[in-house]
Length: 206
Image (tube, rainbow, N blue to C red; front, side):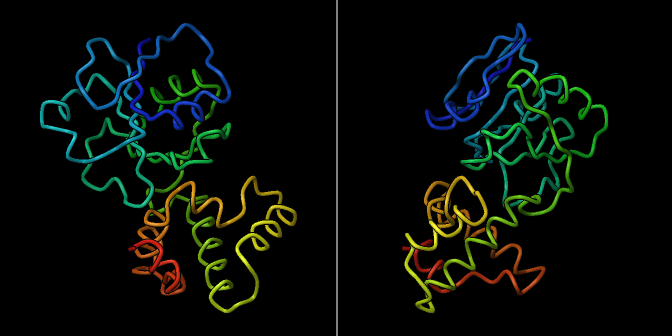
């Protein structure tokens, strides 16, 4: 089995945090491209413009696409959307969405190479875990706006009180405020309670 992974240094380290098992050969790339004989391509640096028609038609290869904020509407059947946000790649579960049962079965044979299991969830913006985390980060920004406490104190309280690996501001820094803002804006189209705080918007757009 040949698996190509498109990732930066930090993403590579997180993906390999649980090691590799089996006899799969993992090739590391810096951009999408045809890889003869590849069973799968895992794209952690996903940009839609990187996928020309010829690559989209490469149906013998499964494409795992790191896209948290937007759904897979209109994607080819052999494309699998997953949550590859920083901090989530180290988890033993990979949150993913796919509508094709045959593709799902193939995917479930590939991801265990990284000592992970796929958790299939609805194809909605933010999946489940990123949606919850974005809401937590947003509330932390609201609290900071209201002068409830400082960033460091809020981070410390959340880590001690919930056993999160990072505080909301630390996690926001890892993921990127623009990604958090984009997801919350998408979710706010469905439910206004996700409307981003003014302070988060300012940080994301500066």
